[in-house]
Image (cartoon, rainbow, N blue to C red; front, side):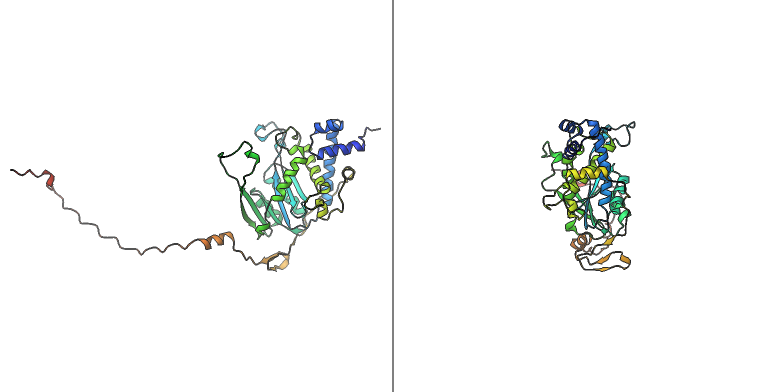
Length: 359
């Protein structure tokens, strides 16, 4: 008979991992060997990815925010050598959230480069049924990735926070404390997004909650991941548990309930049993997107390509041209005065050298 961990022990291990504890801390709390905890984590992470693929698809939301959260595997990026595997070093988690329901739609763990960005945006596109308004930070690889997956008809805006530079007036904790008066620059990339709704506040708040519930992403501690597979499993488990078991205080329901995916708050026992028995299924595939009805006056374009909207507010470039004063009129060109006549050549006796008068 195989030595199977009792169900009560499994629930305790799952609760400890979702509360941000490390593997060794979970071992001390539950009296379960760390190798057993690691094997259970890998099984739960794989089941979480399969459950997410089954539940979170054909999403109909109008506001999506994306961001990246930093972490590392085994060592910091500055310590990585050529002999280390490719997974060692910095590991960014790209995450997309529905700003209305706070549900995590998609995520991707990898390097902060164009390849990971393309895969992340493509997975986000495969789960959508409605063309959303998308907001991100100023990370440049988002622009070609969004254009390739969603097309240029999407309403996409980037919001950039320009932090103060220099060490003048900074305290010791300045690295983790934002300025009190951040200056946010919003720039339109595609379409005509609503500037008032363009923000990354919800996804940045999610990143803060993730560092609390996933100890592998916490800064300045020893709970960081040593292997890439373990890190990816912990990320998947954390986001699926957030969607199904975490009640958002302002909504008073879970993100999955707000999005209409489930009708109740999942318990840890229900989540554990589902993750361990979830079967492998097909990955989401991209379907034709329906353009949402714009709030401003608009006329539909033929072929379902979107809407021709009336932009009441001028663009920033047009505002700048209108606000600039007209250039002053240039004075009429006058002919140059003739040059003075040249003095005759020859020796001239100066008065300074005149002989003194005789008395």
